[in-house]
Image 1 (cartoon, one colour):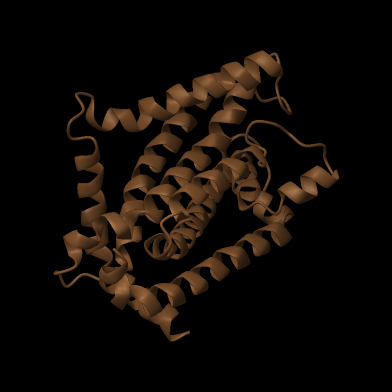
Image 2: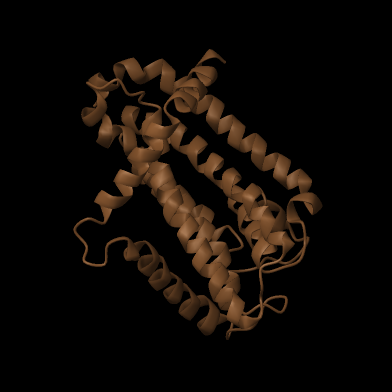
Length: 267
């Protein structure tokens, strides 16, 4: 457990540095684009349109779900997915790509996935805010239930960071990790309730609940679209996801501290 406390201590000590690096990363990733940071909204919106046209308009004939237009149902659920998918993929290759830049600096390597992920989280906040504003003209107004986002967002960040801690180290040791994560995340996406809804109480739904994305997608929807405290009504599912997150963080921290002195040899 010493590795876990070491990683936590490094992040607390370098918290403000991580935030500054995250903002810098966000700027340089869009520096050469004429529209700049606007692409953080434009790109996901274009992808959402494609999914809506294929799955919502094409397959479902734009039928509402529990009284909510499918496009809004899709928007809220997939906003969380964009952050998890991009954050984990970028976090997985973060150490192997940024190692040479910080190797000679007094900067903890465990903070590299953190600032890469934080830069994605800023974009996520902007996208969620835009979706909340889009919902207002349709009659779906923010209510007290939206306060749940202050629980779900940190949980989503913690999950993505914990996975990144594990996969970023694994990515240095095993080069195939990046490709494997792309395949795994693609599978998790289609095994989640983002694009389609499983029958309530079915075996398929029970299997899908093992996917952490299920809890986060439904939690976001409860906070923005519906009037219920999802985390209270499904506390067992919340506890399961917290345990999964903790497991990834513990294993990732141990693996990171054990091998980081040898990263230069592997890279």
